[in-house]
Figure 1: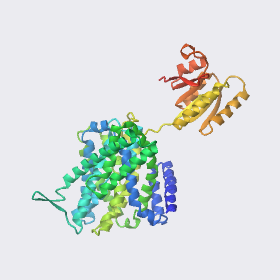
Figure 2 (figure 1 turned 60 degrees about the vertical axis):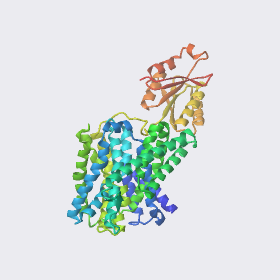
Figure 3 (figure 1 turned 90 degrees about the vertical axis):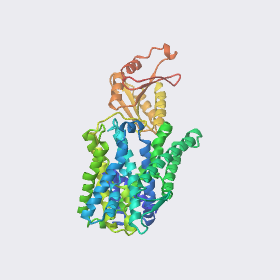
Figure 4 (figure 1 turned 180 degrees about the vertical axis):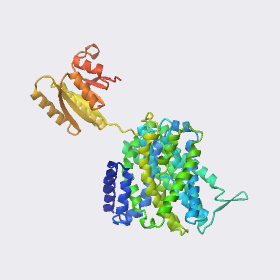
Length: 549
């Protein structure tokens, strides 16, 4: 089993990165690794790991939905009005219906089985859509109108609808028949109760997510049960997973929606805690993503694709280009989205993967007619739409969406901390290097040590190099020497390398308010567009920190 885990992690990571370097989404490489390592080709993955695939997939989807919730923006959702709500129901419903009618013609299905196929295929993949939308938010694409937020919310709601209808159809097509409930002498079928079930699943999911968020704030912030981000993340992930598991046992609410709602409410209740958890779940997703897509590839049944390949592509095209596009049009009708932004829904809101892998084999296992075709269609939809959706999202976003200002309080923004230590051959060099080392360790940053040569002092330069090597031994740094005017060269190097801040020394022994800053320090301070940190020798304290635009 451990060997299988090692194969999954190592092969999944490196082949995924190879796909990224070739310009394709990493998930393509991971799915291909799963196909190769799985029982269809090499059969390297152990039965124990394959048997736990559903549980591992549940864990991975929980992680990505928590990430989605922690990245939602309430103001942007409110700005969109009912667009997000309509995106949660109309595209999924129209695509499922279009697939149902197409399957009745092409595969000779009756309507219930055709609709069952439609529910399997029309479900959207949070594992593909959520990372793509969060990536767009971190880059600013479509954020002004809240387009990524609307897609994130809509994809979660659509899966609630389709999974409920899927369960109802399974009950209807199996030997158990359709469940009936009597209320006050009135007998109602499950079909008649479907609207109530959908509302209840959404309402209770949101409610339990809110209560879980309040519990997390109580435990992690008010009572301080944890000491670091890792512990915060473990507790939050355990609580979210508990909601998902309980929802399987008591199917009266959507566990996945509850997990997503918990992340959303955490932003409102305790934004600092949400920010810490955002980083923790980012780290969890690095591992979860590999397992999710490798095991997804391992479970794809390649042999059943042969007979339905061409008709399957036709059905997918009908569902996407006719059914789903009609739903997209109706969902954005009356909104402030222009035609380019509506067109972006084609790559951004059409990927299939996790839900299809989770439920695609259920009709076959229950002996429902056409179950083998449904399983093959589920596999085909994954192989075609997941890679295209992941690739198309990042490819077409710059072409179809407007770029707005990124809100770092809602998404993790990747920033690189690079500090410039400007040193001479005086005793201040040691203090500057000590301070910049401390700042770099706190921010996990890198350092450029710069010495501008204005007099010949090779021995002093070598001494600075040795000090840098000693004080920055655990920090990635680069030692530069240049010739020229000292202030001008400091500013030039700082701009060329896009440093975060300049750290340098300042002479003086009287109170800083009364000291005329030296000519070099004064020149750098007056001309630098980058924050400047000054150190004074006798106190080793920060005396000035200014930012000029």
